[in-house]
Length: 292
Ligand SMILES: [Zn+2]
Image 1 (tube, rainbow, N blue to C red):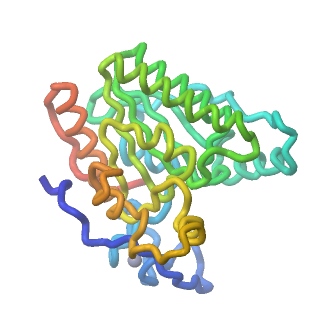
Image 2: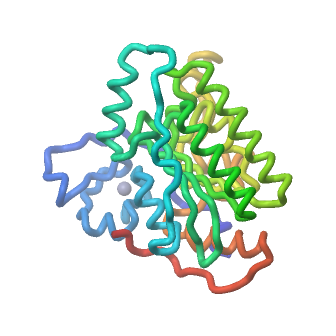
């Protein structure tokens, strides 16, 4: 099957500089520097047609790309972070995150369908405080996983959480690692599958808890996936790191991911996996080609 093949894109980021150009017409690829027509880029699910670089996208696009049209029903929208430690500037950061990502917390959860199969799902969003997990994030995720157990449906989580566990809530953020992991254990005991999709970047306490607990772990090409980042590791051990360290392809070769799948193949791949795991065969949606 084509999705088991390793993609050619190596995922090494360069520091291509952005030039002044109208954002709404052209975009410059962060990896190869190619100037891309925005409409074409959107049609290609924000993947560079020249080098295969996957631009970061928000929760809304992942919902459109992965789920059956209009099937997503959002839940627990009113749960939002407070400022339990009175951390400097935290409230301001929460407000900014809400403005930027258009959501009140760094994760959106709900129920939906993929290829006609009912699922429960969570989508973290880098746009809100780097997709970091605080107590509201953890509570929303915990509740939707327990809903999956009750509804007897599989769980899908798309992670885009470079911020890991949110430092502004200290130990309360770290507790969410245990809480979400315990909920996934309930899902496991109920015999229900969990598919974890890792996107750039997924790090820290998120990677060290629910994100890496998938029965099947799928990574987008070139994503940075790990606990501590490469710079911290390099400074700690005082040695140069190999090329592509902690990128999806590296993690695939080291057993931390089960497959690396390009964005446009995610939907058919997840459908096939769910059909296989649930022993419910049917139509497989075609490769996603267009995002609106
Ligand atoms: Zn490119």
